[in-house]
Image 1 (spheres, rainbow, N blue to C red):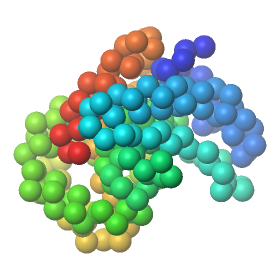
Image 2: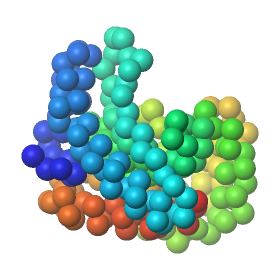
Image 3: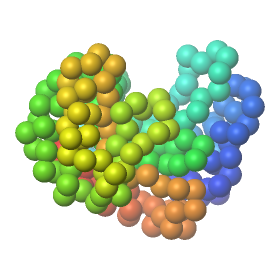
Image 4: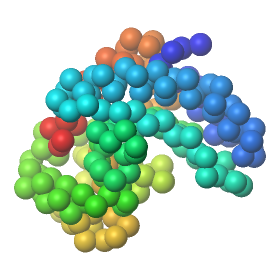
Length: 202
């Protein structure tokens, strides 16, 4: 089994009915990869950002009925959690994987992050325009930068700033047949290249 990259079997886990069966498959197939990605990229991001980064692998511990639709490892400078600050995240839904950076609604840093990114708006056009934006990390829907006008992007950042539930994450999306999943080494190098881009927002 690969140590880092995702396979069709991993994506199909999200088709499994029932909380316990899906969680069991997540724990045995995907979580070890997320743990490995966490170990690798906590070191990589520590070097990249100059601040110690800690990996947080999703445990889905609060779920009692509905099985998770996605799973992930997130990185932050806080060893206790990541939701309260802008963070990097690697994860997957049933139809795609992703590597993103952004801020979610729990963060008290939302307004400061939105202002900073609005002041450096040109960065979003310097990124590869196949990178995608998520305005709700709980939903799989994302929009390519190439499909967003400057007005669309600005509206997303203003919503992050002014709306309590506002979120904004940007990064690369990987389809299940993506070339990056051909080997662990290819996937790791690709993720590193994405983080080298996204750190411009850090």
